[in-house]
Length: 208
Image 1 (cartoon, rainbow, N blue to C red):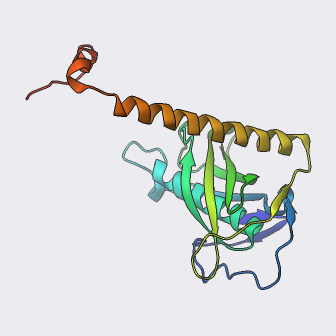
Image 2: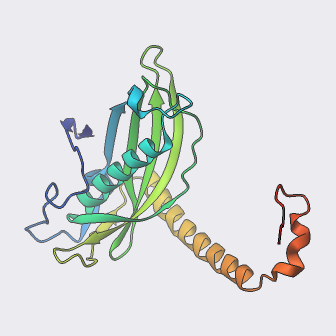
């Protein structure tokens, strides 16, 4: 279920052009963060569990992808696809029988891209205990009827928290770009034979 403005809608398999038709009226220049804020809640059932009895990480990733799609598509007024995922850290395990809620909002927009922030919480329905299990960021790109990237409305920042998240997204983008650049430079300069000493304390064997 998606809870939005007090209504519940069964989204089923969201990422489908048939379930999310393209907009038929002109898009606004800007949309507020609140327009696309979405919460998806689902009960964790036994078939979602891994061999250790905990909820499989792939189930949570699938739910995060769905709620990211819902938030991004509501803001964009178009079909959106996932481009990258940043910071999927499983902070605590999720148990069978817990009620998992995924809170998503558009934190940043470019010309055709959107950054959706997702917070995942799990509630023990017997005790009412709530725990924070995941925070992640999905980069989405809006597509037009031909499947090409299309422009999205700007973002109206309604609260100081919205502004903080937008600025944080800019810094995260800059940091990731710098980190990728430094990593690529390090890879291009890597001389394997000269770095073999780094393996001395690692749990591996060089057998050639």
